[in-house]
View 1: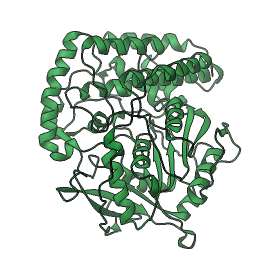
View 2: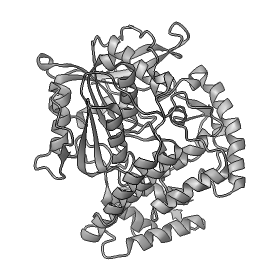
View 3: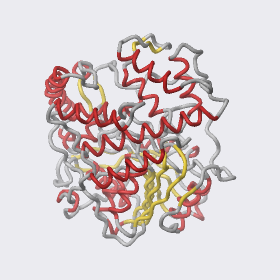
View 4: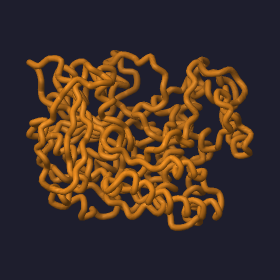
Length: 512
């Protein structure tokens, strides 16, 4: 299952050496604004009465703490063993666009019994997301969105014109919050939540895009951290070239691992066949407009085909991925049929746009079609099977004409004394291992990297080794030695296997 791993690893090392790391931006190292101390009134959640819900009021602009405010939706599940309770554990499932409230609803199936005994598990929908004043646009404007893969100057011109309509419309619909949904603002919200929970210091577990919130918190509030566990990490130092290149390598590596499994395991429906040739034929058909998604009758784009390579490797769920590829190639329907991935028209009056958060945290803009074409050409060289990573490819055009990022990319700086724990799988198709390695290096000697020698996005719960290490860190502040690695297939399972078939593990908004 590691046919291309030496080339993959070598390419990552070369990229890490070539990608410039900007200096820290003043906006993220400025003196933090005074946090609110609003108490939260808890009541049973309407959607999930076994959990408690409430609201936390925060300023729209933390530079004006007495100015206009919004309410953030918060949820918690109280510690199941009050006598053993350590405190509150704040969680975030990623995205951008993932709901911390819904993550709390699903906490019994996502965290160990011991962690649930020891902590009140608390989640919140970040500003601009879900129940916390979401970023919205007029559906009539949103539905004019051109195809997100640009193949000509005319396509670039169409996106340039469209985003000049989109962003003013979304700003008018959303209000002033539209310009304040960056992860630095979310980190300040999280400190207000810490204070409202009555915690002197924060205990936090963030996944995927939730790690960026944790990284920003570490920069802003280094003395207010009890424990910070960051699972499947973002790298905030990357510019658009580095972001696209490392993501292309990651999705190609995931596809290579899938092919390797399928070639060796007879339970794969494509076992014994030329998987790469079948995959290429599907991409060719999609580009010609000849590939139809059987369950909906819709014509599939190349981008939508490639989405399967990313989403099918997040779990990973290789069996479903093999069944989907076989289905698209004329075979029987999968045991579980995933929804057609990618962006599409929305119904109703408004469309949510969590991509606005990404545009405020990263500089993903390109200045010309030539620059965009160069990004895609490089991605194609690095990812000969998958061509490019669908997530940033689907998001990048939306950041045109959106203004400069409020929280621009920069090298992280942590000055606190509390140890930080970062974890990542080697074969993560969404947040590549090199991102976690870079973030650990930037955060300094107090940051420890835990590597899972396996596959997929989110390492907690996949095997007992890393799950126990994260639990021990969050509960007892026990830190593993630097460079600790966990093998695949540790004997005991810590979490019960989930029976529901699904692709992504953190409800990414681009899953469609």
